Amino acid sequence: MSQYKSYKRGHTYKHESDIEKGKITKEKTNVLKQRKNQAKILTNIVKNAEFLDDEILESYEDSIHQEKKESGNFKAHKTRLKILIKEDKID
Image (cartoon, rainbow, N blue to C red; front, top):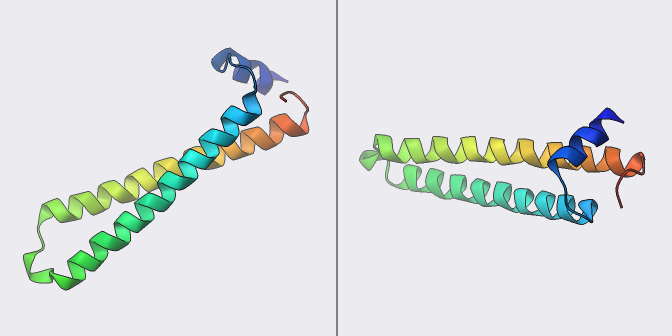
């Protein structure tokens, strides 16, 4: 119950389930984009190992960080949506 009150305080829109599902889809898409980006960077590193510099490594680390952030958001929204639907608190 308290989780629902807290949720409603921060989310004042109607059709909460549709909005949450949209967030989940967006974050899942972003995670997949980051993974593709990481694979591309790693391929570039392997092919051009002699030209490796800090900028390339930083971009790889940034991509990993962004993926973890989006993945955490995805999991949190998915869990929240399941709980709120289970408790029949949102449409």
